[in-house]
Image 1 (spheres, rainbow, N blue to C red):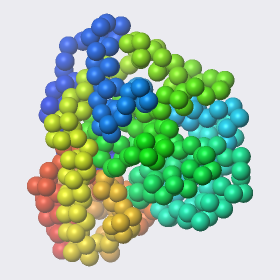
Image 2 (tube, protein in one colour; image 1 turned 90 degrees about the vertical axis):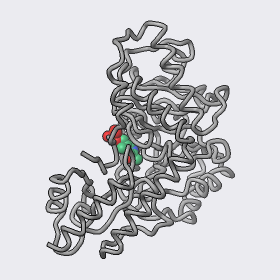
Image 3 (cartoon, rainbow, N blue to C red; image 1 turned 180 degrees about the horizontal axis):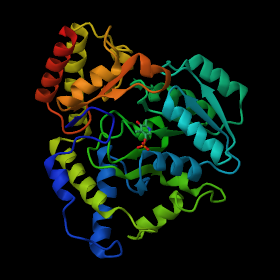
Length: 357
Ligand SMILES: *Cc1c(COP(=O)(O)O)cnc(C)c1O
């Protein structure tokens, strides 16, 4: 089965085989070597200095990293602005609300472009804002939010940037240093091509020194970071998931790092997008606004999502429905994972079949 949903992804055989490595106790030296190796490789993807940044590993899905990031890094006296232009932006707000953070939603329609002028007016109106949380790639629609522009706007107001990079980390550009990203939540099972089970937050070490009363036991980043720096772990990690992630990171290195993956995704996405357009299937967003990871398309006339999904599934492909209101009008294709051009050629042939019948 070829998974074209935005994670979990189609695994390479090598990553799958890594799951069969020997049993390992999470209090033994071999585990700490594994943990250190993963932490180092994650920072290397974007050339981050380990004295300035830390990668903190958690056992959970991407949402656990989002939750750890917001609950652990917004100080008692801080005020957070959350940009919402899709499901995941709204999820960031929900987390802020549950933890009782002092936050303000900046609400937009799903898929809507962030109006920088409006955002600046909001900064001017709320001079007490200290942090801004935003989704980099809004997987709801495939929109890639312009972090560079947002960061330029934040700087004069001294607003610190926290991002959900769950579906962009490892494939899209992320300039931590210049964009002033103090934290980025991400996961093993999207652009890094490993299994679900391990999520992580890349944090600027300085940001861990905030003044706050811990709001969570299990998701407290400070605790994890201290232990992991000492070569320990506060709780049991998913050992097999670490094995798989280590191998997936090795594969990323071998292919030439995130830029090589970015090029590969770009090539695959251009192919699918152009072929579907030729068949009369329209993308939701223009190319410049979309990520290279996932694109949304309007359903072809006279074909329901279920018909499309079921025909493709029978032939070995899983596509993804739209969420909420969009479920009626769009479908999504993600090209994360061990996917080749040949796979996508087969997919396009299936689309031709459906449209003819
Ligand atoms: C997948 C995803 C998440 C996390 O979802 P989980 O189901 O917890 O893995 C968070 N943010 C974005 C942008 C995502 O694409």
